Amino acid sequence: MIKQFVFSFALIFAFLIPTQVVAENNATVATPTASKDDSVKEAMNLLNEMNLKSVYENAVRNSTIRLVNANPKFKKVEGKIKAFYNKYIGWEGMKKDLAKLYAKYYTVDELKEITNFYKTKTGQKVLATMGKLAYEGQMITQNRLKPHLKELQKILDDADSAPTATTAKKSNNTKK
Image (cartoon, rainbow, N blue to C red; front, side, top):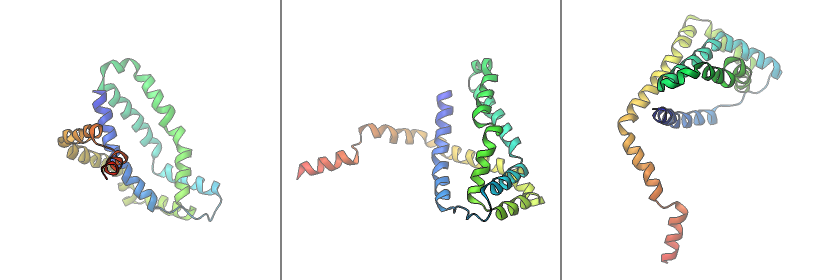
């Protein structure tokens, strides 16, 4: 069950991460118009308006629950699992890094505009539905791929027997 969980998790991220990399490559780094400290401070205001502390607390709780549900014997160490997640991906450990990340891509004025947007009725709706949209998008991806996992497994299995580009090139050179 754990292997299946890990494989599904890896499969989803195999499709989500390349999309994020493309988005990252197309993003522009903010041109500093204020001090880095001011940018990070404003980013913290944004993260607070986004209620990311609650989001991260829920993520830790849900990750713990999913792992414990995947294998009942993990119930014995549920507290340690939650502590592990809190230690590495909990809000207190993540907030400064996230603020720096936002400050990297947004100016102080842009951060203020985004924060103000999230204070509006529409902004609050975006925040309320963002997690659901991401989750449901992942489920759509997973449900579309699930019936075809044997096909993917065959492709992966073929990697063992398929010649590498270097091997194929050497083989073609020896035929000449």
